[in-house]
Structures are given as structure tokens and as C-alpha cells.
Length: 356
Image (cartoon, rainbow, N blue to C red; front, side, top):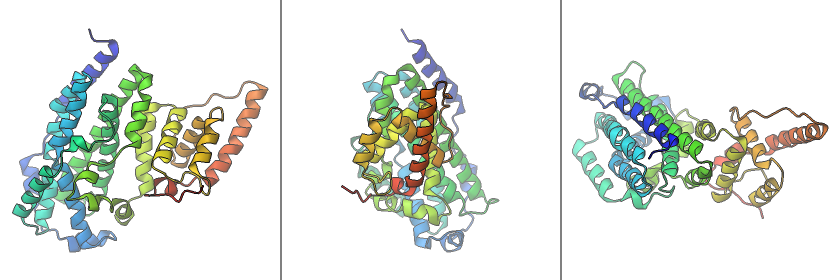
């Protein structure tokens, strides 16, 4: 017999399936507008070859949708989560399957041979079995957390790629459609994660692991892994901001957790495991040990990071006693100091210079 929480998950999925939308042939055929990478690159700081590579990254990554879907299905079967199977088979996979085509058309419009692209796609598919590379866990809540972050990043990447084209062009309009679907998928995975956490608060550890171990699928695809490694450097050159991307990711995570302490715990785990430099000139091991021994320490970290990114955390109760007032004032002093020392750019940099 299904619990009320399971019924919520099934009902949510059933409400999403009618939203399935596939790419229309007429839209895809309208994309051949004789754009050249040499011309559109003028809106960015990339070279024409880098523009081509950015679209190759999108094409190849999208072309392995069946493998990503299989990973979700494996987790659903392992944990008897039929609602997840229903979502992936009935909505997410068919909704995603057409997303490679717009990027193939853009590359063909650039003058890339279609047969060469199709050979490259086939080689990419045979070069990897994604489920064996997936590192964020197979528990359903880990998979939906992974999906939320992956779709959020993809949505922002397509937002930046869309800007290469005039807003009145068909190519811009088609990329807007694809971007819109990725944004919807972000919300869907976020809602599914929140519903599971509501059902069982102990699932927090799976969510933290999925976020800490997260890697884009393209990190594991030989044909594009070297391109993926350049994306952090390219984002500012595409008139984007890595800090803005981080803000969007953490905003989605925070909407799921709805708790500054949980958000702070996840951020500290991420900083520790990925060896990011969290505070300037202070080793992570000292910071984490200190925060762990402070009452409300992880909540403080959550508040500080959310504030720095312009996000609103969970509401804090006003102090009611003299002791609470003293603690409140001390906490604000610590927050002011931490805000000055917190390095958002260091937090998201590829590697840190750890000081021991």
C-alpha cells in the first residue's frame, strides 16, 4: 500500500507527463540561416573555433540522453521507485531526446559536414557506458538532486549560447525552446527532491553526497571532456558569470532544503571534499572544525553564503531573552567578519591553495 508521501510523488509525476513537448520538424528546418562562427563571435570574447567547440559540447552531451535515462531507471528499479521510472519513461527521456538536433543544425549551418557529425555522435555513444561513470549515487533522491543541478547548469549554458544569435532569428527562438525545457526540468527535479526529503528528512545525506560528487556527464565523454574543462573559463567570455551560475545552483538547493543549517552543511562538505578555499588564508580543516563546534555554526555558513549570493534563507527567530540577545549580537559580528573574508570566487575555482 502506498503511503501519503508516495501518493504525492505519483500525483506530481502524473501532473507533469501531459507537459511533454517534442521538437517540431518545421522549427528545426527553419534554423538554416547562414550564420557563420566568424560573424556571431563578435558578440563575445571567444574565437570562432571556440564557438564551434561550445556547440559541439552541447551536441555530443545531448546525444547520450538514452544513457542518462538508463541511469535513472537503474536507480528507480534498485529502490522500487516506480514514480521515478514513470517520470523518466513518460516525460523526461522523450522530452530530452530532440534536444541534440538544434545543435547539430547550428553546426551544419556553420559549414560542418553532417555525416562527420553523425559519425562523431556514434563514436561518442560507443565510447562510454555512462551508468558506470555516474558518481552521485543511485538512490532516487540522489538522482533527482543530480538532475536538478545538471539541468540548472545546462539551462544557463544554453542561455549564454542563445545570445550568439539575433533575438529575431529562428535559431534564437529554437534555442529558447530548448532552454525553456531545461528550466522546466530543473524545477521538476527540484520538486521531486523536496517531496522525498519531506517524506524522510534522513535523506539529507544522499542529497549532500549527490551535490558534492556532482560532475557534468561531459566530464566522462572522451570526445568533449577537454572542451568541458574550458567552460568555466569561457562563461565570462560569453558574457556570463560563474558566480551567477553558482547563485542559481545554490538557490535551487536552498529551496529544497529550506534550512540555513542544512544548506551550510552541504556547502562545507562541498568545500572540504573538493578542496575549495572557503575563507581567504584560512585552511578548510580549521574552518570546518571550528564551525562544527559552534552552536548554529552550519546555519551561519548557510546565511553568509546565501547573503553573498543575494539569496534569502530561512527566517530566523528574533531573540527573546538577554542571553539570546547577546548570542545574536555576537553572531552578527562573526557574520560581518566572515563576509569580508569569504571568497566566492575561491569557492568555485578549479583548485585551491590549501594552507596547512
